[in-house]
Structure formats: structure tokens, C-alpha cells
Image (tube, rainbow, N blue to C red; front, top):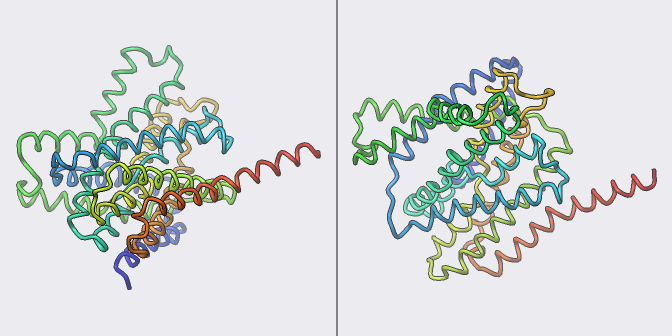
Length: 368
């Protein structure tokens, strides 16, 4: 079996194992314990390892800059499209959740295995450099955005001015993920990379980081809950996201036509990565703050954590399917006209059913 396909099937199987464990771990405190392990141990460890192993080259600076430009561009499009096309209210928890998730990327789970199998270690290293821009977006900007949305819902007299700033800074300092980033940056500035750490420290951190993928997938399988209407919207959103990613790749390849075939493939596949787990980590942090302070007004929280889990669960196999399609067709999807036409097809697949559904609902209302 193709190693990349085997890797994808193993990831999906882990979600299935988590689903089968529901009877053994049915209580919310079981799920909370698993979440604590992810947020406080596995996630900080994998971020620390990734940052400590990064080697930035000036000639490749356009890769992380392009990744973060994609993040912000997709965030703006999400803000515009969700209310207009999908009818999602701007100030709803669903809107905030999708805006945090849709522009994010998780190449480690959904892109890196395919790049390593089909293009080799050099392209994997280039993808890791591109992921630095995405990490800045999902770890720092998304966290600040989530906190801003939370505090906007807090009455001004409860937390305002310097008090709000103090809470945000305090939360940033206390978060294990941010502590890992800070420690990695300090060591890198001092000229210390991961290989130069004492063997016992490096081995411990590596073992903790290895827990990340299985724990996240088991957690998704344990907690995911689908309704058909929500599943339909998620698939439509992912099709729309994939189409915009292809258009972004089309622009990049048009602006830099001298890229070799492997780099062109990287530019196409990297933006097709699944949505990231890290926005869910921020959502969990905000939800915990709301439980402690009682600021989920009228029972309505800032974010919809269940929706976030469902998007994550669908996004992983969806992204893997696109990556396999691209790699299995040779260099077909490195051609600008093919990318443009495919993006148009995906847009039609995403938008047409939504428009038809809304037209039918409007007709029902008129008839009644």
C-alpha cells in the first residue's frame, strides 16, 4: 500500500478508536482529562520541538510570509461570506468559531506525511519553514482574537481598560503553549538548537510531542457529534476553502513561474492542509474562563466547541483526499489553467447547493 494512503488511514482509524471508546469514557470529566493532557503537555512539547528545529533561510522568507498572507486573506473572506452566503449571524458563537478555524492550517497532520512520501525531505523542510508563518497566525493572532471576542461580551464595568490588558497578558504568560514558544525563542536567540539540548531533556520532550497526534484524534473520536444539517454546511465550507486555496496557489504560481516542479507542488498542497487544532485550544481556554467567571451570558458562550470539533473531524480526511488526488495525477495540478478551472468547479460545488437550498426554503415560506 502507498505509505501516504496508509498514513491517512491510520489517522482516520484513530478517530474511529476514539469513537469506540465512548462507552468506556462517557463522562465529561474523562474528556476534560484528555484535553488537559493535550493542551498542557503534548501541544507545548510539539511546538517547542518544531521551533527549536527550524532553520530560516533568507531566500525562503517568502514561504512563511505567503502562509500568513493566506491566513489573513481567508479570514477576511470568511467574515464576508459566512453571513451573506450561509446566513450565519455575525455575532453568533458559530460565526466566531468558524472564523477562528477556517483560515487556520494543520500541515503537520494532513500535509507533511504526503510531502515526505512524494517529494522527499527537502520539500518537507521547506514546508516546515512555511509553517512558521502559519504558527504565528494560529498561536498568537488567533489567541488574541479569541480573547478580544470574549472580552467584547463582558460588561465594560467588569473588565475594562488596564484590567482587560492585565488579564490578557496574564493569560498569555500562564498558557503552557506560550511558555513553550517563549522558551524556544530565548534558546534560539542564544544560538541553542534542539540537537544541542541535553539528551535526557530532548528525549523527554520528543516523547511528549509524540503523544500529540494520537491524543488529538482520540479526543475528536470521543467527542464528535454530527447532525446532517451541520455536516452539509461543513462540507460546503471546506469545498469553498479548498477553492480559495487553489486560487491562492494559482496567483502564487503566476507571480513566481520559475519555481521547479516540486516547489510548485508544495505551493498547491500546503494551503490545502486541514484546519488546525490550535484554535480549538484557544476556544477551550475561553470556555474554561467563562465557566469560572460565569460570563456565558444567557447560556450563550463565545464559541461553539462542539462545532469546532466537528469541523476538525471532517477536515482531516477531506484534506487528505485532496492531497492524494493532487499527488496521484503527476504534475497536472502544477499548471495554472488546471488550478483555475478546478477552483471554479469546487466553488460551484460549494455554493450551488447552498443557493438551491435557500431558494427552496424561501419558496416554502412564500407558499405558507
